[in-house]
Image (cartoon, rainbow, N blue to C red; front, side, top):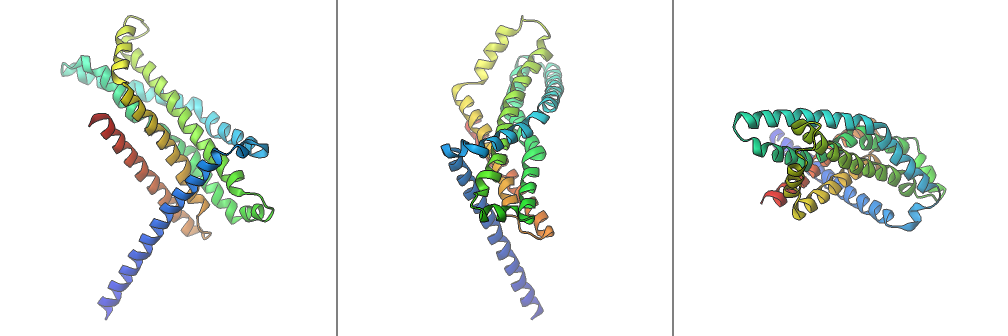
Length: 267
């Protein structure tokens, strides 16, 4: 009897966990669709909502812009030096710079920028949304006839999306400049070779995959933490578990996008 009871209890917990996970995925997809529809609506760019979006875009991007640029430049310089020295030791110096551009610009920098924005901006914003629900601010807005998704959630999501795209674009430019300076120094002699290499790497198909990957990375980082905070249950312990679940879902989505981009580039 004890064994059968334990088996039934384990199956019930497994079923409850599976249902909760499926519900969390559905809520993230639904809320992402709602936010995208609101982004395409002209009414979302009027009145106080426009000011809130501008504020969130500045708050989530401005304070971290300089620090992340310096961090990206340092990271790119270190990786470029390691790759170039290793390639020289194996007699593969002509492939070193192309490898640096592919690894840094196409793969590492966009993912690093999005993870940085997630840890610094969007996950704390999702926590803020959960705290607003706990304090009853969301219910008060609904009672006054104000749409909280439009006024509270969408500006934070737009700010996170803008931060991801801005930091990814800026860090890619910094990576290209740092890679050139690490190999050729402050000389224009290597510019024709470097320009030709850039054209060989960024073919139309690769460029399209890179743009789509960066956009989907940004959407995942901006929307999934918001959904976790928006639908977080009120008890504190369950709220912490939901935050960890949202973080796990975000990493799963980023991993799937990265795998699809690698398949599109190299297969």
